[in-house]
Amino acid sequence: MSHAPSSRRAVIAGGLWVGLGFIGQQGIAVLRTLILARLLTPEDFGLVGIVMLTLFAGFMLTEWGVESALIQRADLPPQAVSTAWTLMVLRGSGLFLLAQVVAPWIAIAFERPDAESLLRVGALSFLLVNVPAAPAALLLRELRFRVRVMFDAGRDVFGTVCAIALALWLRNAWALLIGLLLGQLAAAVAIWFLHQFRPRWVLDRALLREFWKFGRHLYASGLMAYVVTRGDDITVGKLRGVAELGQYQVVFGIAEMLTRGLSEMVGKVVFPAYSRITSEGRSLADAFDHVWRVHLLLLLPIVSVLILFPTDFVALFLGSQWLPAAIPFAVLVLAEALRALAAACGTLILAGGKTAYLSRIKLIEIACFAALIVPMTAHWGMTGAAACLVAVYCLSLVGHLYGAQQVEGLVGEVVARASWEPVLVAVLLSGLTWGLAVALQAPAATGILTWAALWSGYLWLRHRELLIMLAKTVRANV
Image 1 (tube, rainbow, N blue to C red):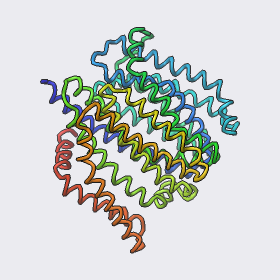
Image 2: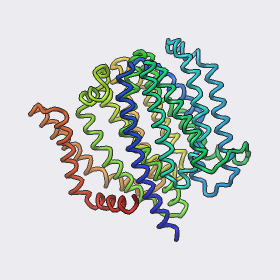
Image 3: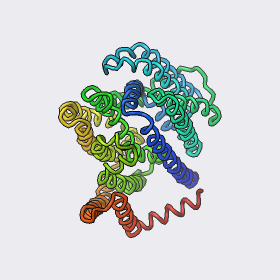
Image 4: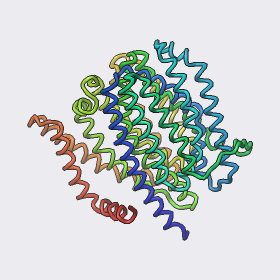
């Protein structure tokens, strides 16, 4: 127990670094999307979207949760890390070869033969992502958040610069794809200098069985997660065409970045912390209480503002050619916020080792999705696809709350106590801001500033102690 204070300080400092890295990465992503959306067309994004659908399918359909197993495992001999690395390289190589075979069929399925060459080259991503995966996971296990932030940020910065430069030169979809691959290549090289792990070709059968035991439910979840998280893209692409697919994927990415991206940021910090708390036999309730409050206080202002002013945001951020995606964008923001809250519970479930609940929740998600996605997309287009996700993630949140309750019995009480007031305040402030904007015919910027000022006042009145604590933590760790 003597190491508890130092562990706590490491997690706090790590949280600050991850938070700083998240802000930087989102800033890079905003700049990249803003520039590329004006240099390229929705159809260019749609063509690369076909490649991304294929890549995501490969990753999700072969996800064993090896990185999570490395982080959660109490002891980690070198044999385990080498086995994990070997497994990931075999995975990447197999997926690359498979993609070369199926590329023509995928291109024909979307009625875009010009996508075949993009698919063949894009398959290099399977290798470039899997090679550094094991040592990158070790950075999180060792609570080296600062280094991990540098790793992720370097990949994103390099890839963004390359994509923008290539877009100015090529003016087509290849700029997006090559920029992505160059960023991943830079990360694969950088990990050699950021972590002392040196790969060895090892396949320990006992460790393989252990990895499978840990990840089999995650694997089942991954199989079903692909249908839910990318089935809407496939449906939009098939029913509405590549141009609408490009619009849908761009606004989906922005919505995910601003909402679920926050959850991923927090999850990178709290998953190792949860695992350590569990190994020490302590309760997770207090830690989850703070995590849930942070999620709500971060998500509610973002969701409220973007739902109130989606057209103004899309016009300013992407340009007039993307305006048809404004309403779908608002609906997607709500869907991804629900998904982010569910993910906060999912991190607790994963740290508690109750991964069976995750696959059961995915069964519920996929049943709802399969019933709604085609009719809703056919009838309402991109907005219908987004609304389908709202229904799916409402059910998902309920399921994740139940699973978290089984891991830590006080979760239900924590959520009820922490949620009602900020949600009510956000709804009231949104109604007030909208009413003033309509009555005064004020521009969106005035409404956003009004909302932000009112929310800041609420935070100071009701969460002053939390703000002061965070400020002291920043001063102590920066």
